[in-house]
Amino acid sequence: MFHLLLSACLAAEPATCAERLLPAPEARTEAACRADAAAKIDRWLAAHPGLVGGASRCARTDDLPRLSLKEITPGVWVHEGRPALPDRRNRGEIANLGVVIGAAGIAVIDAGASRAEAEALFAAIRTLSDLPIRAVILTHMHPDHSFGAELFREAGAEILGSPKLSAGIEARAAAWMESYPPQVGREALLGTRVALPDRGLRDETLDLGGATLHLQAVATAHTDNDLTVLHVQSGTLFTGDLVFNGLLPTLDGSLNGWLDWLRGTRPEVTRIVPGHGPAPLPWPDGSAATLRYLEHLRTTIRAAIAAGEPMSKAIRESDPEEAARWQGYETSHPRNASAAYAELEWE
Ligand SMILES: [Zn+2]
Image (tube, protein in one colour):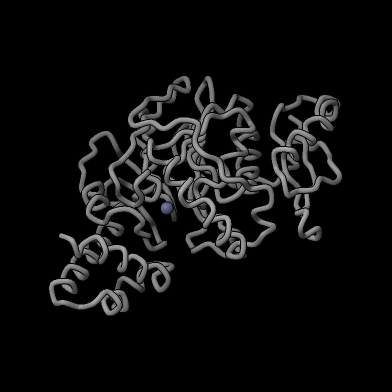
């Protein structure tokens, strides 16, 4: 396969440039890739105001930058993000991403933190299979999982998520587009546009040909728009951020709801792919650290509220044992404590 690459720069900041991949239509030969390049570039730039196009070229799949993927069970692949908070060094590429390849098509689970990361995931997928990418399934709204979605839509995929995903992204998109570029770097996000899902779903099965995915929306937990994806044949559950491994869980939904989900019995699940950190993990043991931290958070915040402590004091208390176990504790724990306090003070 040959892929069209375009050098693009920010119109307002012409020294900030990056090469973007325009994924469709894909071409078997370099000549076919070049044939409609000009029209394709014009269309893409028209849809991405604020960018100026420069030189373009056609490259083979093997010559593209690509993410590492490991096969955890036949047909199911995982890219492990860096278990850290988003910064300029990791370009926000911290979430785990999944790929399931059946006999009739491909599904992507979470799209990455930027168009650039999604392009590198797309290139990695194309070294494995030329089948159509039917769906990109977003486990929830957070930018490290969702910002790459538009690339897959351009490649022909339908963007799927919880029925509440669209509203969740819409409410926060403007704030994210302000706060995220300085955090991870403008170049890392060049060409990235927030994409809303094409469809929300509560409970649905996706047949990729010998690979069946069961998509299930979850009651408010990590966020109000979490969705899990079960690869039925292997019992592998993509939990999104309902489970963290190594990086401290972040609470943006309901602590009580999250603990209820974690305590659920799931006989159909044998292993999980957490939203962050090394994967896969056994189920349920792989969720024990997340469960323990969140239970501890609930116990300590309930005790603080019962003792009449104000929120400002409760969020400054930290537990050295938990702090030593998790990346990002110093930054995320006070936010979790504040969210937990706001939820639990009304009990
Ligand atoms: Zn998240």
